[in-house]
Structures are given as structure tokens and as C-alpha cells.
Image (cartoon, rainbow, N blue to C red; front, top):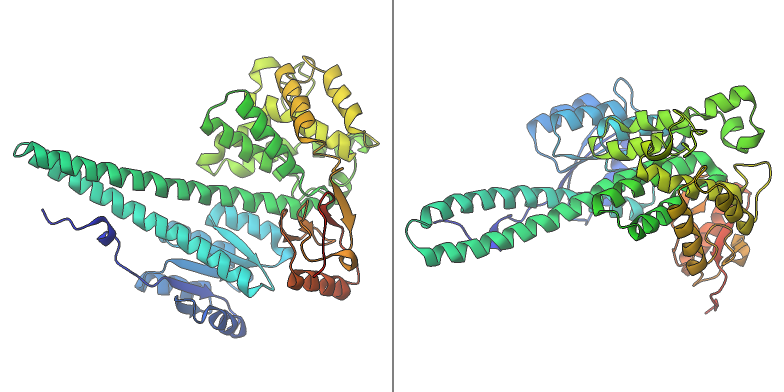
Length: 447
């Protein structure tokens, strides 16, 4: 036998990155940003040149600009995904390119997108994260190959020496455990793709940002309490994050107006979003169950929902879990009726419609969960401030969004002096205050 120790399976290597942009200044800036990172960097000034380079050399990651002549970033990354599937893909894009970004997510299978102008630290972190996923894939392939080789050797050794077989079996089990760990890493990569879609929804919905995450967190916990299996939990969580993806591209006068105030024609357009959301995700095999949940998340038990007026158990369980949660959040946030309801009145609305619109078990769990965790929709545990009141040590209670809905910082971010200064400078540049939600119960001290 010629196999070496486990730590010799993957030889050391220098990650190779290809940047593609039609602007030389951008490519030069990206090169400077990557100095000292331990990466080998190459550049191409068009999609065609990038494909030619990929045909001659192997790269771990391609970072492409969206707006390029002849072949844009979405088309280029789609070709990379089809021809060089093991090469990971990142898109550089501006806020105005939202539809093209969706196309790149669907067709190009991008790992993430980076908004321009980028923050150097954020760019390097995202590149490192994607390279880590690429490394996991390479290790998994090598480990599987090695496991198959060792299994063949074990079959031969079994005829010669039982002691050797036992020893090698132990090694194989170790390898399989390592493969399982790398698989877990790849599942995290899939979740990152879902969160890219979720951030796009937040960007489009603006003032309604965070709705999907609230529904996802509550839906996941309720599904756990109902005893659902891990795979079902994952699909319900993904469906909750993406349930409004079909609204992207709808006119603002439909998306921004409470459901009860829409005209008959607007209502017809609005009710198309579950079917549009399902259609967007059907091209991703691992999200087909989630897509069906999204299609049915406005169906009611008594058949008065849409788009198909399904009844009872003909509605997928995942949709029956999400429907009262989404309606509760919409009632409290003022998106369902003409005026927002207090959480207690929203709860009464759900209770009054048990077995008519909503599953009793789900409503009971939702009300119990809110009693345990506090009011998670009216945000009584938060206070809204502007940057002039922002202090070091404050912690975000919601994602921080610009006035146009662009995500700036994630929920739970703890501000340091530099972050405080950057937000204050950004407000000065935009000449408009940002609503900043921080946790109310914490004491903040200036140093």
C-alpha cells in the first residue's frame, strides 16, 4: 500500500483568483487590495478574455464586474458555471443592477455579490469565505477519492490479514467523518446563496426589510416544536426567508401600500407574487420544496386564499406554518389592513380564525413563543436613534439600512468608534438621517 497520512491528502497550494472588468483602474485597485493576502491574482478586461484564461489555467475563484460591453457579468458567470463548475464565482455590482444580480444568482450560481464602491476589508473577507468553501470542495473530493481507494485496498487485504483490515476500517471511518464535516460546510454555502436572495428582497422592500428574517426565525422554532425533521426545518427556513421574492420588480405603488388599500387591478397583480416566487426558484433543485411552500403561503384552510384556493391538508405543512406568522407580522406592521394592529389585537385576529384560516397548533405555538420571548414584532425592546446619538458599544437590534433600503450593517453588530464615525459621515454625505435601531435595555458608556 502507498497511502500516506491524512495530513498529506491535500498538498499546500496558493489560491488563484481571476478578476474580470473592462476598466483598467478597477483591476489595478483590486490588485492593490489583494497585496499581502497570499493569493495569486490574474486579470482580464472582458468576459471573452476571462474565458480564454480559464481555458488555459486553473482558478479557484472568479470575481467579475456586472456591467461590461458585449458580455455582461451575469452572462459571463453563467458560462463559467457551465464550463468550469468547480471555479467559485463572485459578482461586483451596483444597487441599480438588481435584476441582473438576480439573473446572476439563478444562471451563474454566484456565491455572493459585492456592492460598488466596495469596502476593502469586506471584499477580502468575502473572498476568504468563498475560497474556504472552494477548499472544502477540494478536500471533500480528495477525501472521497482516497476513501474509495482505501475501500478497494480493504477488499484485497480482507483475504490476507484481518488485523490490517480492522486498522484500515478505522482509517476509513475517520475519513468519512471528515467528509461529513466538509459536507456541512457546503450546506452553509447553500444557505449563503439563500441569504443573498433574502438581502435582495430587503433591498427592494425598503421599509419592510427584516420581515422575512422575523418570519424565518419564528417559523423555524415553531417547526422544531412540532417535531419536524432537519431537512423539513431547512426548507421551511429557506421558504420563509424568500417568501416575498416574487414581489421584486412589482410597482412601488403595489409593494408599499397596505393590502386592503389596493385596487382590484393592483390586487390581481399583487396576488401573482407567490407563483412568481416559485418560478424564480424552480431552477434550483435543492430549493424546490421551499418553492412549493412559497407558492402556497397565502392559502387558507377554508379555501379562501390564493393562488389556487387550496383547503386543509392539501396545503403543504410548511405553508400552513408560515401563513399565520406572515399575517401576524403584516397585521402589526400595517401591511395587511388599513391601519396597524397592536400585537394583542393581531393575536386575537389569529385566534378568531383558527380552523378557518389557520392551523390551531401553529397559532398556539406562535402565541406561546411570543409570551416566552417577548413582543418580537413591535420591537418594544428597541429604540430608534440617529447617528448623532450613536455611541461606542451600542448593539444593532435590526439590520441597518440606508434610506434607499441598501443593507449597511447586520443585526447584532456592536459599534466601535470607527463604525460610529463612518455612519455619521455617511449621513452627512447623504444629507439624510438613517433610522438606527439599537437595543434599549443595554447601558452604553462612552470611553
